[in-house]
Image 1: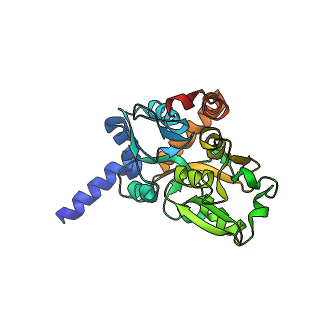
Image 2: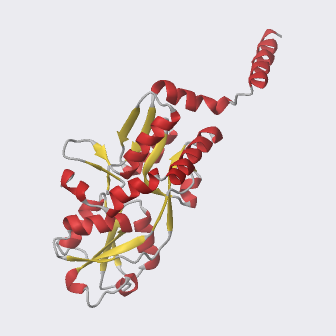
Length: 265
């Protein structure tokens, strides 16, 4: 009976206060800070500068988000891509901000915000093949070797749209790009923003950037399932910075200018 009375009392407090059980996440962030999982290897979304600090489009947006949510502090947690969703699910962080494409498979594990960017897959091809390869379709032959990063939508797109080519998977984008530069593979399939920067930074005149995307992919931030208030707060923040122009300002900074490259080269 005593246990029943305690349970009823707790329920009464919940009903009277009107505060959902999951409201604790925002309060936790205000008290302990916002923890962001990110893999700093995806230029210009996130990368590590010469001082070892994580910089980029997402970190700048995270700083604005942290301020908007009234977080005690902001912590950027460098996380390997293949472990980034498990890290979120096991509460190693509060949100994934790492240029993640929204897919049905990922939706089964996490909740996504509204998209904050639309991108697509593009091709970096060896310069000596430029006359033969004008689009991704021209690579769809057994004679060609194509590469992308393990566990990404670049890998999915390569296997789906260029199935006849030999496919090679790499742990990092940089490794795959250098294998293309060195002639070990013929082309690198990846997101347009990264390929634009990689061609300028590492192409060394040996690559040609086929910049017309052949897929449409919405990019979003991910949080743990079952937290509608947190999701609503983040979507509200996103709508606000888009309306007020902060999103566009940071987009121009990271995607339209390249002066930041001197800090990471």
